[in-house]
Image (cartoon, rainbow, N blue to C red):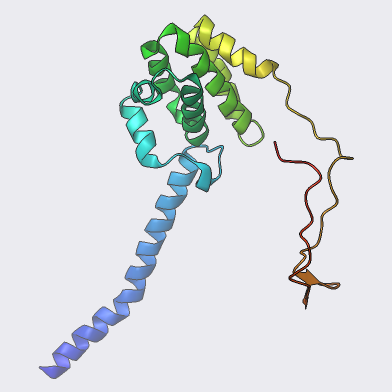
Length: 193
């Protein structure tokens, strides 16, 4: 009887690595398909949580209740949602149909801000946002979108950039020597905008 139990354990033990590898392979394939299914324009830490995206997807009018006619909040939420998940464009269309005329320009500005976030990372997303704004054929949304496009991005000249400074806590050729921890901290030449 002891031999049978031992042989069962050995048989199970020999199958365990195969089972573990197959589970790992399924998990990797699943994660790879999920991450490549949608384009994201924001880094993971800056994206809107999935729960909030699902809430918006189920009830786009929730944004209007949250914002309470504050156009900056509406613009910010539309930007966050589209930059986090560009597949939410149809829900933005529902939001436009639910929104009063005075709030629709804020939705257009939010769509333009999302396009600005996505531009360097996902140019196809920018084109789909532009096409969707045209498809909506709403003058307020188009005007809001165009108002952001007309804002020229601030160009920083290469002369105004300060030279990179070494870490003040470490000194030496390879930054391996401990520096003076009581030395004054250098202030930036320009304040961030």
